[in-house]
Structures are given as structure tokens and as C-alpha cells.
Image (cartoon, rainbow, N blue to C red):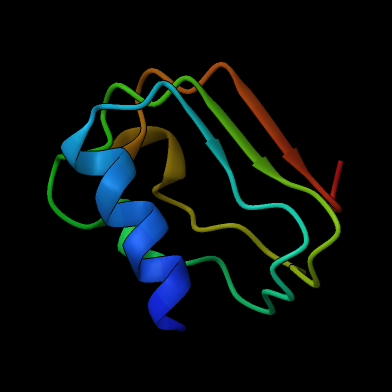
Length: 75
């Protein structure tokens, strides 16, 4: 995972962001860093438009229980 993406996710975790924008990151796989530990449980909106994702993790709802909006190229 690119260091810029890791930094963005780490900052969101530390600052307890409710919205996370990962649009236009040329992602081919869902960043599993988003599902590690419990730091992003408060995340409510995840924006991942204009990436190359083809699938989402099966445990997404379990790991991000407060997620109410997910925008991806899959929508």
C-alpha cells in the first residue's frame, strides 16, 4: 500500500474521522488497512469512487459497523 494512502488512513484513525475520501487512488483491491484493529469503527461514510475495485471484503459491515454510506465504482 502506498505510503500516502497509509498516512491518510492513519490520520483518519487517530483523529476519528467520520468521513474518509479515497477517491481517485487507482486502487485495485480494497485497502485491508481500513479493517485492521478497531480504530475506524466510528467511520460513517467511505468514498472510494474512480478506483478499480471489483469486490468488497465479506466482513466489511462487521469491521465498520457505523458505515451508512459507501460510494465505490461498484455502486
